Length: 547
Image (tube, rainbow, N blue to C red; front, top):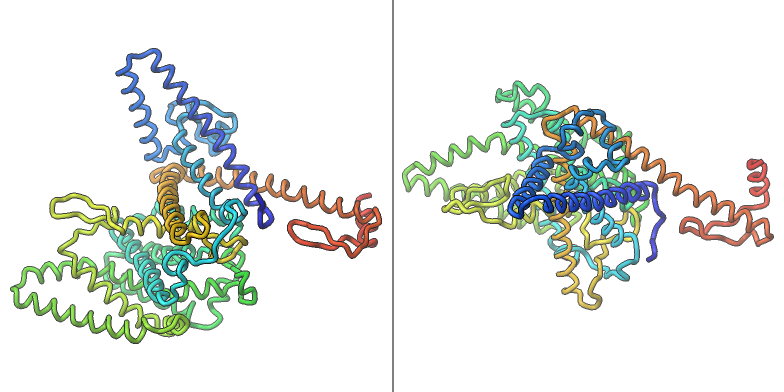
């Protein structure tokens, strides 16, 4: 198996951390098996089954309540030190391992799936790849549906404004735990994708874009939140959001001045376009849908009012009800047709430029169209935004494609398990080839793998969030954060040392070859690159430095 690019310290740190976790999980499963075997040998068969179910239910309850690194036994809960879990983990405390077996299992599975990402993207393990684009747009190079994809992304950003505004306006929960859970859901997977694949954060632009708009909604409602019940205050906050967007994105130079200090984090250089500014990608991606999240907030605020209007409309006489519905439908159809004919049919570059110059007008039309479609079926379907499903008249819950969208959107934006780029920060334009010479069968297989892994990563992200980000214990949340930062620092330091040692040995090897009289024009392979041997002056300087 050939690795196509040098190993980074973060990648080494990841494997240094996940290997002990997997080993501990295996040991925990062995301990659990021994425990059940002993219990079975001293109990009646029926009692054994009951005990086993009890143990499983307790494990599940601990995990769902945020047990994670907190033991179930009273003796284990005595110590409240932030480093106690790490000490017990390193000392292979059997009680600790058994109590946290489910969390270790989730962490191990998460690490294995990310290792699969690495095998697909950074090695020749799967032999070959076909240079085709992903899914309908990417796989078939269907550039004619680019504008439709732009609508889907804008709709997702619209839901960011709508969903977050609805939650914070109704629940009034601006706690540290809620904020941490929100950031975990948005960034946990993508951060590990950046680590394991040695990619920049901005390569997965959907994640920083939604993180930014989520933070802006959180800040808008969180500031002076006790006055959110006053309509004029909400109006002022929404107006302030518009002013902030206009100031940052519409006035030249402000965006670069504001985000310049964060270039190390948000900067990105596309290997195919190395001459562009490091902030170009962030400026372009965040600017396309910069107003739509605010419109989502407006919709969320007026949604109860519109629902009341529709309830009154349903109680009106038939003739009046039909006339109003017909007028609304006619306006929506006309606006939709004009938008489709004069905007949607534009080519990719013109369409993006139009969004950049008059985004409010375009997105208002788009949202009006979406709003009309949603409310046309409000009485036929009872939509549950939490479960992403609909209820029939009999009350039965039916799974819809929206659940699949929910899973794949939150995972697939970051890295499709079937797509590869082969180089750090490269756009994923290659498709994993498992069935050579049969592109459609290969497409079906890799898509099935993609959906399956997306589902598991979605579930694991939520499981680990529950374990490490407790909802009602800020002290333990801070302890977990301190423990995580400390563990990462140690692992990264060790990894940096492991990566630096081969470089030092390579330098000594080059000096030795040069001292044996080889031509100075010859090159050697150094970290995947061909570099010249040191000159005589270099050897003298290095010898003096050594002595």
